[in-house]
Amino acid sequence: MKEFQSSSEWPKGFIVVEVNRQTGPVIVWSMYSRLFDHMLQRLPPFLFATIFAFSLLGTLVCPATQAPFGMYPDWSKNVGIYEVNVRQFSPQGRFEQVTAYLPQIKAMGIDLIWIMPIHEIGEANRKGSLGSYYSIRDYKSVNPEFGSGADFKALVDRAHELGMYVIIDWVANHTAWDHPWTLTNPEFYETNEAGDFIPPVEDWTDVIALNYANDGLRLAMIDAMEYWVREYGVDGYRCDVAEEVPTAFWNQARQALNQVAPVFMLAEGQLPEFHQQAFEMSYAWHQMGEMRKLKAGEIDAKGLADYESYEQDEKYPRQAIRMRFLSNHDENSWHSTVQEDYGPAAAVLRAYTFAAPGMPMIYNGEEAGLDKMLRFFDKDLIEWRPHSERALLTRLFQWKKRNQALWNGAHGG
Image (cartoon, rainbow, N blue to C red; front, side, top):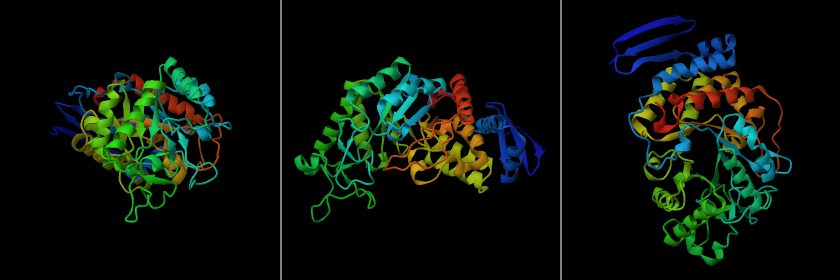
């Protein structure tokens, strides 16, 4: 119940402060797009970002009244996540260069690494000169483009030495056309009326859809997932197009993985049911859309906060971790860059992804001001250079790690 309210006028907008005896002060910042631009022009980016983020944070954070969900590893409570595209990371495009860079990622305050698919990829119907990372030909092999199994193990071991954790992309929805299963287990695949294999999406012509009604497929996929945890010590998975695979499979896989080692699971999807048994974290795609609306002046800051409150209070369970980002490999390759999307508002909205409930994620190169869309099927290097974005990201990741109110899932409050 609202018991006190005061308003302070600002140019082209206003701030409302509400005080509730049970929850304490709550700041609701109603900001029109012109006020947004007005303040951007007059305050240093980090100062404005901090003010803006904390103002919204008041409407979003609730008391930590529920114990953390049992499957959530303790280390995940205050980490940020860094996505690695090995192919575009360095001229060599190999694991060794990523391993050498790990201390710099750690220095920014990031403890969780997500590596895009590391597996051998198909040649049949390949797109571009190098093919898609997500066209898997062998779930238990390493893509020789990136190095050897020993090279990958050295990367994981080095991360663990630094107190970091590694999850890898898992592509369970489809395989390459030349995966051995097409010959040994054709029943693992979806087919059309003529009995031919089919892509999961019309434009995904380099891959074919798997059939999760088949129990043998489920067991084979789980066996492969267990392999990387057991043999290489990976700490979990980012599961590609997770909503296209039955949730029942993810629940089954998670139960099996728990028998091998504690893992952390990220779903590329937004189903609330994912958080019941299978996944600690899911993509906050809708939040990205709301941020774009804010930047375009289609909603004000209170509209963004209201949407967040709906997600946190009504849609998702308390323990759910939502992954927050301004970009990722999909957005960068197929949509636009951070600069094109957000312009001078990027620093403000970046801070918001750290203040909102959830785990902040950055894509490799953002700390170097990545300002181009990297090609997906061909070599296209990140331009590594000194950039002010690194200092901003370092301050934000360390800010989140130090402040328990900003921690992930049920650990925050």
